[in-house]
Length: 166
Image (cartoon, rainbow, N blue to C red):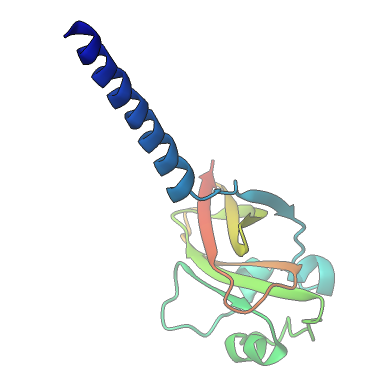
């Protein structure tokens, strides 16, 4: 009786292991870890000589704060751009322009950017971190920010994160 019971337990244990291993190998897919690449960024100021774009560039939008868009052609730029003091012919064969606005609670001394391209399998997405260096000015402006980056495909998902530094 004891050996028959042990034999049944051994068979049950063996079957459990086989089922567990086969379910792990047959049903699981190889999941690739995302690849993160830091992309170089420029701006309308550095490439085209526009001055003080943060406060002079106007964007024709229905919402004036916390808005952004990825632009890949001159027509798209001209449609949103309303300020004649900065009207460059952007090389959209080379660049994509990510441009937006952000409402601030205080004045702004400078804006810094870090742009990452994240590739998971065959899908790319962009993640932009925008850091505003705030100052003591009591004016709460709506600031325009802009990043020229290597040309990106239409429809690439974009996420923008904002940081405020004192």
